[in-house]
Image (cartoon, rainbow, N blue to C red; front, side):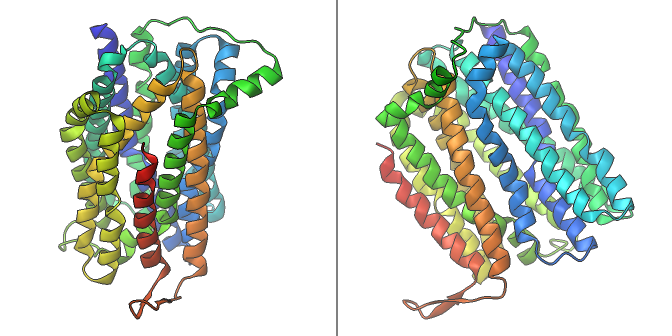
Length: 426
């Protein structure tokens, strides 16, 4: 059993390295740098698509139980989909430079979004199958601690990937002819590690999957079967509300880095590197507290710990609001409180596995993550559209006799909605 748990953690670590190097932040900066080089003015919606497209693709993971029935192996689904998804991302550093040399800027941006979308479609389905597989393997009494330990390995890998990207951006990346080209090296590095994350799974034995009927009506019923569980529906409402809050301010948050932070920071740190350092700071904090939250959840229960964490996390958007209104270094406070997302992430997965009856874990996981992904996607696209639509517009707030931009307003609304989600944790 220890060998199995070790292999699962190695999978998380290698995936984390790849994700830390080739994540949404890197692609957002790649899109913005391409837009700057081509005089694109409205970047809110393209940035929103980078964030939202994979979530829209991820809705199809609700069909994961059907796929597993067809393949009759959760292990095989994980290995094939993780590997294929990683190789697809390798097209970004290959074809984007070619399209840019041909001055096909729109095609280059579209290709990045398309490949990112396909990657997440495959990766999400593989992850859903993986957690169903692991859930049958890990005993309930230690499951919270184990999920927290694996989360720590993922966060450690992500931090290492970010460190490598930071080093590259600070040295080799600055010597390239075009600014957008510096993003391609970390993209290639990330692809290699994402692909290698499937290797540890080879050593883990398959656990027999109870094959279902191939009747369409039965399959359809299976997908929506979790909706009969009131506890599950309440958790879905909680997840939908916090993801709506997260999505509506995504474009504002990511573009704020480029607009309010100096470049270079302190006259020698590239702006993108500074953003990665903030993310590394948050990851390091999450790595530090992750085992503690696993033990706290096992001792005091998921809901109690999640309520405390959500109250702290909700304040993050308010720090971005103050960064827009006064000094940009308020942003540091947001990344500090977002360390507590780890408690919510561990709690949600543990609740889903706990609520699901034997044999239904895949359906519970697939439905929850598909629903919240769609909410996050449409909220992100809406927020990006409003960012472009309301550019230069000031909203008058009568109660305090002030005027706020859309970005400032979205940060306040995002924080308030997160706070409103807390009573749903009961």
